[in-house]
Image (cartoon, rainbow, N blue to C red; front, side):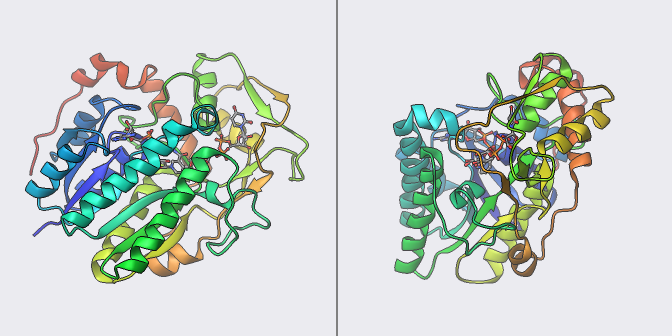
Length: 353
Ligand code: NAD
Ligand code: WQD
């Protein structure tokens, strides 16, 4: 019989792509989201792509009553926990919201899972916990440090999970440290839909390519990198989604906990990323150099050996493919999920489950 997985933050960027992967692999998916940074329209797109249905619960992970009712009634075998806030700059100006949503939200979820005897969890962590890496590629044993409340919230949750696993060996926890997620589902029907001004490079570049923003500011061209711009490890969101499936599968086969990087192992500079996007969209992207962004590091890319060994997983898509998919998504959905007309024009597959 298919396992049932609760996905918190399922309507968000990475959650929605992971739901596609899980449904295609035959899992029964219960999606939970408070839609604070996403749209309910995502769910019909997931169903359209997969031809399968998923149950959707609109709730906050901090809502004890809603969570308890769900855990009591749905026969959940495992949880993938994406729900949280993720904007670094916003976390600096509104730290309490970040600790409340991310730390208190995770704590509420863990308490509820403990109460209902559900002890398999995949947690969305971030390369942000490495702070300024002392060397690259970054391995999972590198020193941890944080420079902002968002990063601190992730580190606190990682430590909380470590203490929990230490106290109760029944827990099976996969902590996944993502590098820089980018790209979109190849159908062009799912993608990242940032509210307001995008914080991250790829969605910003996509909006400049679309003509929605006049120019990309490249934050610094005097880093000690080959072309002076920052090096990052961009990973296709569908590769990331597959990583979650691999992590979940491992939790059903092995006891214990593990922490792995999910990246490609390749560093790509801002200029290289912009050039790849220009090739994808077929026209130049206006850009200018500006000063470094406070808190940015010169280079951060993953060592991927642990994920290969533990999960038999490696990233398959390169930056060129990420840009092609991101551009397809952006150009077909210039208003993201707010463009509901185009959603209803598409044929919807018959649900199979
Ligand atoms: P996202 O904002 O697109 O998705 C998060 C989802 O969680 C949203 O749909 C939001 O509405 C929901 N949510 C937020 N708080 C909630 C709450 N209290 N209760 C219920 N739902 C809530 O973000 P994403 O890019 O998909 O990121 C998913 C996870 O991965 C986050 O935990 C994020 O910190 C982590 N992460 C993201 C990145 C990245 O660059 N995108 C990198 C590393 C780690
Ligand atoms: C990438 C590169 C910028 C925007 C952040 C979080 C991290 C994780 C992923 C959640 C850098 C440059 C960017 C722009 C630019 N998120 N850039 N102009 O900073 O590596 O990581 O997202 O966990 O925690 O910190 O990603 O996409 O913001 O930046 O030149 O308008 O692009 O300086 O070199 P970052 P990013």
